[in-house]
Amino acid sequence: MEQKTIVIVPTYNERDNLPVLVQKILSLPVPVDILVVDDNSPDGTGKIADDLCAKNPRVHVLHRPGKEGLGRAYCAGFKWALAEGYELIFEMDGDFSHNPDDIPSFLEAAAQADLVVGSRYRNGIRVINWPLKRLMLSMCAAKYVQIITGMPISDPTGGYKCFRRKALQSINLDEVRSNGYSFQIEMTHKIWSCGMRVAEVPIIFTDRFQGSSKMSSKIVREALLMVWRLWIQNGLRRSPRKC
Image (cartoon, rainbow, N blue to C red; front, side):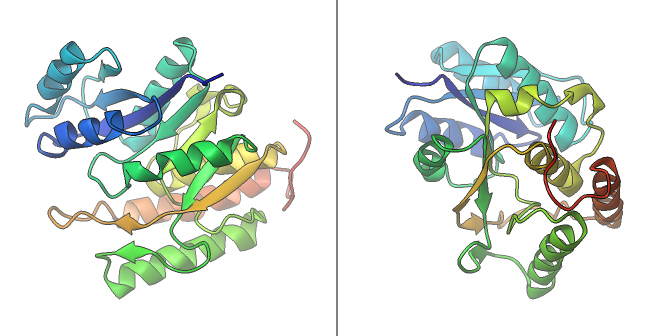
């Protein structure tokens, strides 16, 4: 029996990428729905999403009044997907840095996991179009998270994930306050620390060739502090507990 699956794609000024991305996802050999969460993009991405929705019942749109951050967009999408009865819920960037062709591999791994994380660093490094400084920062952040929290995930800041319904239901989404990289760390840690099954699948990450990096000192500081907060919330444990 096929499990109801949806890919959540947050958008802000992705009018050129969105139609191609939606078509790519819809053409996969597995049936997957799409939820576009648009933060009132000034370039008209929301209107394009509405047009795609009108043409295909597998495409859905959630409009938000403004840009509040990636974490808020995903949490809104998660709530919508849970309310609509989806069993497997993906998060994916809207700029093709995540390859939709990897979705079948995620679904295969999800048969034995509550959360599947797409890893850029499992069994090697697979990142395209990143300067060495950015790559080293990301890899050091991954090691930092592992040392402080004990969470044995090779790429805890990665944003290509597949959640099983019960994994998201175990989290109070209204209490998730982080954004950016810290959001990715927090969501994975909450699931892992409760003893749920977390699997990793290798992916190739291709950063967009146009536009500026979303990295900022504020995002880095938030992630550094979040790791310690998660460790404290887990009772100073570096291993899962019973929830």
